[in-house]
Amino acid sequence: MIESLNKIIAKLEQLPESEQERIAMILLKEVENPEFKAVYSTFSLENQPFVGMWKDRAEMQNSSDWVRQLRRKQWQG
Image (tube, rainbow, N blue to C red; front, side):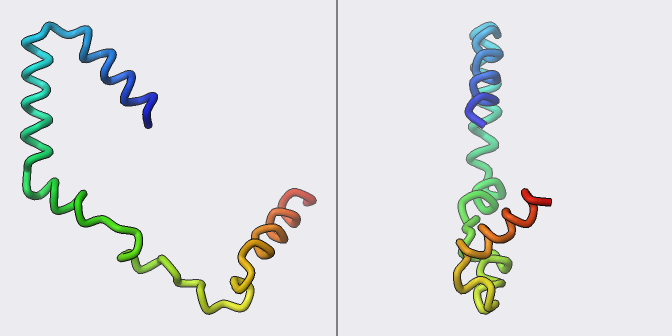
């Protein structure tokens, strides 16, 4: 993600200053949009229905063991 942002910044820096300002204004307007804020400010993993869905399964009591066994099966064929 950082690499992508750096590429975007490098491209923006190649533009004339007036174009940089125009694009900055477009981005700021979008970020200040209430719909944008509603989507990105309220997202939280704790509120997602899939989080904790396996918490009561017996094999998840020791998730490290479960992952270790799963990897062993996959890697040893």
